[in-house]
Amino acid sequence: MGLQGTLNTMPVTDLVHWLAKRSATGILSFKKAGINKRLTIELGRVISAASNDAREYFGQFLINFGLVTEDQLQKAFETQQETKVLLGKILVMTGAVSEKQIHSILELKIREGVLDVFLWDQGMFEFQDVMVPDEPSVVPVSVDLGTLETEGLVRQKAHLEIRKLIPDNTSRFTCNDGAIPTDLDQRSANGVMLQMADQGASAADIILRFHSLDFPILKNLHDLIKRGWLSTKDATAAEEQAFDIPELEIVELPLQEETSGPDRYLMAAQTAMQGRDFDQSVSVLKQGLAEFPYDPDLCEALELAERGLTENLKSEMLSDKRVPFLLRDDLLRISSNWTPAQRYILSRIDGHRTLRSIIMVSPLKEVEALKTFHALIKAKLVGLR
Image (cartoon, rainbow, N blue to C red; front, side, top):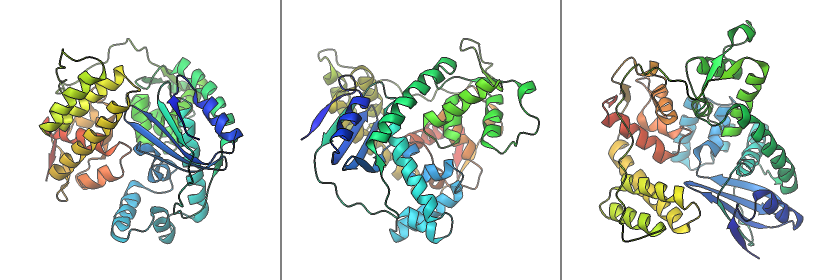
C-alpha cells in the first residue's frame, strides 16, 4: 500500500516508525525546495540512498573523511566516464581505499542521508509499496529503520541544543586564542575549523570546505564553543567591507497580477523557459516554493528549469578544458562579502585546475556551481583561458 503526505501532517519520526514496525519494502521519497531524496527499503532496512544534494554523493563522503583528495576523486570520475565501472570499484582497484572502507562509507552515506531528513521542518514524502530493483554495489550494505528512528530522535534533540549557540548557518565566530591548546595540529579538522573561523568564515563556509552535510560540522563547531575555543559573534555586529563587490544575484521576474497562488509563479517561469531564460525561471520558481513549499507542480517545474539551466551553462562553459584564474590577487582576502558558494569556488581556483574538474568534485549542486562560476566571470572577477 502506498502513502504520501507532508512532514507537517506526518513527521518523519512517525513515518519511519510506521515503516519499521511493518518491515516495509518499497521506495521512500522526500522532497523539499530543490532537494530530492530516494531511499530503497527492503524488509525494514534501507539498502540504498540517493539524493540530488551533491554533499550526499559517495565521493563527497570520501573527501570529508580524508580517504581521497579532490584530485584523486576527479581522476576516478574520469576513469568512470571512460569505463562505466562503479566509482567504488575503481577506487578499490587503484588501491585508494579498501573494501572495508567502502562498506563503512556506504553505510554512513545511508545513515546521514536519512538522519538529515529528521531535521527538515518542511517537505513532502511518498512511499511506494513495490518490489525493489537490484542495484549494483561494490559491497552490500543496509541500515535498520528502527535504529535510524532512535538515532533520529537523538539528533533532533542535539540539533536543538546546537541552534541555541549557533542560530543559523550564517553565524560567524571569534577564536578565543588563550583557551586553544598551543600544540593543536593545524592540519586537523579542529585546526582547520579554527583557522577558517579566525579568517571570518561562516558556518556555511566551513560546511562546504569539509564537503559535508550541515549537522556533523555544526556539532563539531558546537563542541568547540562548549570547550571555550570559539564564541559566536553578535549577528548585529557590522562587518567591515574591504571592497565593493558587484551584486551577483539575479533579478526577480515580475508576476502576473491576474493569476494567484502557485499559478502566478508557474506562468512567469513558463514564460522565461519559453525564451530559454532558465536562470530567471529557476529564480521565480524558488520564490514560489518559498511561499508554497508543498506544491508538486512548482517542484517539478524547478527540476525542469534547473536541467535546462545546467545544460545551457555546460554547453557555454564546459565545451573544452578551460582553466579559470582570478582577475584580482586580493579576492580571497575578501571574507565577509562572499556567499559560501562563491567562497568555495574562489578557493579552488589555482590557475591549474580546469573549470570542469572543479565542478566535478564540488559539494555544490552542479547547477549552483555553474551559476556561481558564470556570475563571477560575468562580474569580471574570474577569467577563463
